[in-house]
Length: 100
Image (cartoon, rainbow, N blue to C red; front, side, top):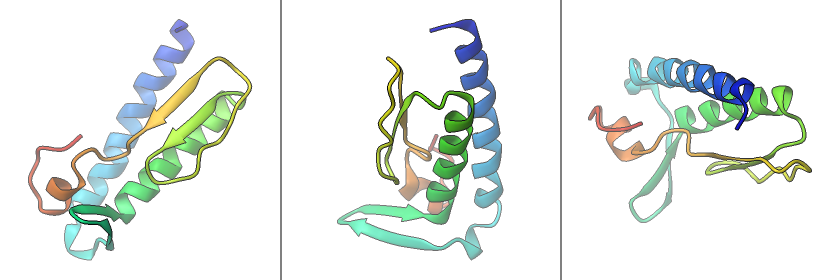
């Protein structure tokens, strides 16, 4: 990975974390849906993934993007981004700070 990609990814992770944290501070208004048995998704998951996807697509339009909440975007470069916007959604929506 190039230094440019590393610097971009590091900044994006911090930006996405701050964005998701804003939702964490107002959990009482968060929309939450069930995707299956013990599997849920919140608007924080979806919106954070959209933020990350859009940033990657703008900076590296030829890269493949695979996310937990959205459809894959096939690219033509050798790079693939794997996105799990909030790992530990059950903890996140329960206000348990063991999530990433």
